[in-house]
Amino acid sequence: SQELEQSPQSLIVQEGKNLTINCTSSKTLYGLYWYKQKYGEGLIFLMMLQKGGEEKSHEKITAKLDEKKQQSSLHITASQPSHAGIYLCGAGYSGGYQKVTFGTGTKLQVIP
Amino acid sequence: GAVVSQHPSWVICKSGTSVKIECRSLDFQATTMFWYRQFPKQSLMLMATSNEGSKATYEQGVEKDKFLINHASLTLSTLTVTSAHPEDSSFYICSADSGSTDTQYFGPGTRLTVL
Image (cartoon, rainbow over all chains, first blue to last red; front, side, top):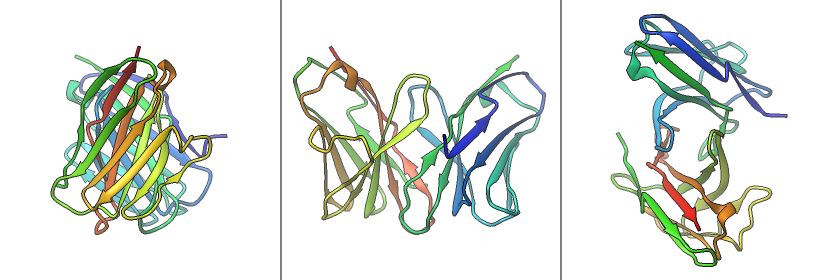
């Protein structure tokens, strides 16, 4: 089974609405990354969370990591068409130079 | 922020030929670089971890003789797909660890199409 699960797999929202994407790990994380990707393009780093209970915000995007460091959520407030894309969570399970295991991805469409 | 480039951005080749993809960290040194591949509508799968000055570490199921990785300097890692076949067609993405922030920076990717 997948170590890192994302939900939902896809999401269609109307412009201006809020939305949440979840990422759940079967093991305790060292660090949790959120990336955005336009299909066929490289990844854009959004945020990294490392401490249990940590929360970070950038513009209209907020990400949280739970206290147990096994679940993270990404929340977008007042979505815009520019938010459309594929959101990937990535997990590091050890410190230092670590490989990232990626979640299944969430495809977001924002309808004007 | 740190910048990672890849070259070429896309390549089309005939079956049986070899293709080399370069990954460069432009403004930082990367002791470790990672190579991923992504099939259409799927997530990224780690292929191998590339360490400067030593042999790459391959993930289970990845043929090391088919996907040759060389990390000759602190700013360059190359992935060579040898004797490419249509099933190797994919989007290949590299990332580099800056070492100072626990953050990986990803390249823009290389789309390989094998005819």
